[in-house]
Amino acid sequence: GFGNECASEDPRCPGSLPEGQNNPQVCPYNLYAEQLSGSAFTCPRSTNKRSWLYRILPSVSHKPFESIDEGHVTHNWDEVDPDPNQLRWKPFEIPKASQKKVDFVSGLHTLCGAGDIKSNNGLAIHIFLCNTSMENRIAHHCPVFFCSVPQKGNLLIYTEFGKMLVQPNEICVIQRGMRFSIDVFEETRGYLLEVYGVHFELPDLGPIGANGLANPRDFLIPVAWYEDRQVPGGYTVINKYQGKLFAAKQDVSPFNVVAWHGNYTPYKYNLKNFMVINSVAFDHADPSIFTVLTAKSVRPGVAIADFVIFPPRWGVADKTFRPPYYHRNCMSEFMGLIRGHYEAKQGGFLPGGGSLHSTMTPHGPDADCFEKASKAKLAPERIADGTMAFMFESSLSLAVTKWGLKASRCLDENYYKCWEPLKSHFTPNSRNPTEPN
Image (cartoon, rainbow, N blue to C red; front, top):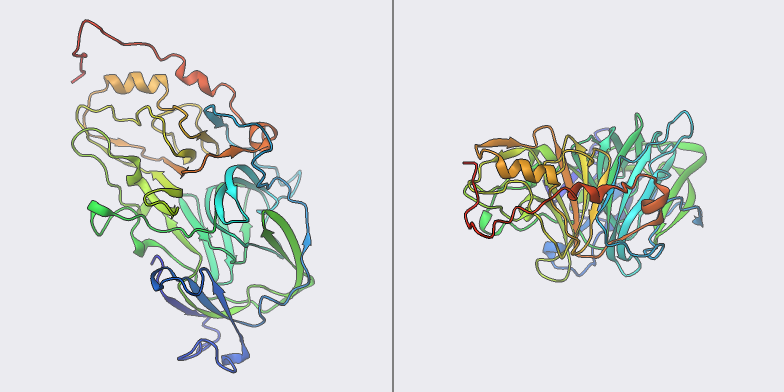
């Protein structure tokens, strides 16, 4: 369940959780106690996040960190001049394992972002393109919470809390400071949303009531699992700190947690479990009804980041143009496609690609979609079967990186042309349009 207080022991060491206290003088099995805090100690109980880990050696047991090459990861939002245009990317190309082995960290490419990582205010959107596992390499992101959305290939994620297998149509969240390593089994691609300093939450439901959207019970967390082994030459610990990458060596496996308890954990969620709310009369409900997770700002109702999906559902609204309408938004919208065909753009927007419609940049259905939807018979119909599109939405104005605009070689220079065939249907002498039904 989402945000629950949980406890877990590796069954090989029964009774490894201390009874009645967090930090005994000597822990069961002579383990070390270590607290991982996800919030200030003095936060209200409802927002206080922490877990206690009982491990073979504490995480402080490593050599000094040294700076390493960041590759295509950046938090410099002034690399290129701002671009207010509608942007779309073709599917990002995954490197071939036969040509060059690339793991999850090496395969991160920053696409866009905004804010300041040092002051814990902002976000970044990355694409990960990898073909090999993180062998004896682990990573942790000090000021960041990240939501990973695999699009092609499974991710076996090792964390200090246990293991998670995350497949396309699932998401996972690794929270601030948590160490992880990722195995892949084929050429793998996906999307990554980093949020600086703010926890993901389930959105408030308001008039919807107590149930709906992403239900808390459907979120899964790992169970305790440890390994007690050493590697010749040591493990490499990669630390993303203030937007830069650093590496240190340690002898013992970082996944040496025998037991843990608390409410600050990694978790995953299967998007098929999302309970869709929709209009059953006329017009559209706002797309906020499709929000899975939100990272709130200090302004009520305004998010640093929302994770929104557009799952299979029924369309039944009468007298309504059913696809997304044309709009300009005070939020920035990055969209990705996990599988299938997005309803508003049947061509050009492909799985493994993406689009960015920045603050107040107009966008909406392409010309072909508009013509078909304007003439369609409005019978009940299934929408988006076999499809899963998603959106990272933010109140921040996102800057695109040099890799996103140039080096990726995936930017669709002809995106704007999908609206060029739109034509005027204005009838100044006739108020009532011809309705298909």
